[in-house]
Amino acid sequence: MNIHAVIRKIAEDAQAASRRLAHMSDMVKNAALLRMADELTWRHDFIIAENQRDVAHARDKGSSAPMLDRLTIKDETINAMAQGLREVAALPDPVGKVSSMWRRPNGLLVGRMRIPLGVIGIIYESRPNVTVDASALCLKSGNAVILRGGSEAIHSNLAIASILQDVLEQSPLPAKAIQMIPFVDRAAVSTMLQLDEHIDLIIPRGGEDLIRTVVAQSKIPVIKHYKGVCHIFVDTAADLDVAVNITRNAKVQRPGVCNALETLLVHQDVAPAFLPRMAQVLQKAGVLIKGCEKTSAILSNIDAATEEDWHTEYLDLILSVKIVDSMDDAIAHIEKYGSLHTESIITKDYANAQRFLNEVNSSTVLVNASTRFSDGFELGLGAEIGISTTKLHAFGPMGLEELTTSKFIIYGDGQIRT
Image (cartoon, rainbow, N blue to C red):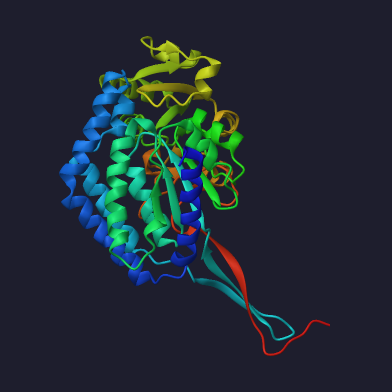
């Protein structure tokens, strides 16, 4: 078989599996998820060994430190993947949930019931943990999943997927509910994106170039976010100790991810007191600071920010800083340069906090907390299958509920339409 024929067969098998999976009980799905968690832990050495093949190859190619960080599987990574499976198993099953019922004047009882989407294709880069997160959420929500990871993580992804598939083979669940495309050839993705008769939704996870390519080629609906230009606004009523701590965490803890801080907005009233403290902490952590003219007047040892910097998702230890005159200016800057991903305000003023929550139009908005909390696991979703910055049909981190849709259910007792 050629690549095109193999991908089509994978999609056909996934569609058949999705029809069976949609009616599987929560108990059966949970048992499989818990067994998967155990198997990942037990086969730890196999996963680490396969991952090291990918890491060594990426290092030989000169991949960046953030890229290697996203690629590397450690003991804590496997523990987190296993814990994610267990947490998804513990979550309520959305399938079959009736969200509302109402009686019509003619006596019909009308309701809405949540059902799986069907077959979901995940196209992703670098992070092997996506293989587990996506599989767990799709399985629990009754969807079959087709996984296509990046070439840089091929050995890691195939190893993890093989463990999950072994569990399916030994369970009542359809064995083809989780499938991994074994090819690194881009023709595999191109073929996958044309199979709208078998695949119901595509979710790309990776850099902006990947996502735009998928959107341009796909005949299938795509859930997407192009980039994460995340902001923190340090309000005039901010606790500066809290602001320094949150800023450091949002920028430094893991700079190569989409919910890391990229632009810091600082109210002019607190800038002279805040910026030197902030700069000392961040520069000690290796952060390169780029600032506007007002920022440069306070911090002499920084680079000048350009117009391009306000648009840039660095995914690195680089931070743009701008002093703003007011909250109006901060919100206007976010509206112009933001990516509808994640924004946070640091303030002790309740009215300012509420205004920021109401007026900032991003998928996740926080008060006095790091942007790094814009994550399905951290928000109690068990894991996330991606973050959507478009409003159809989901907005923000996507968990189980976002992997279902609803159908109308109607109870009658002989009604006919006149």
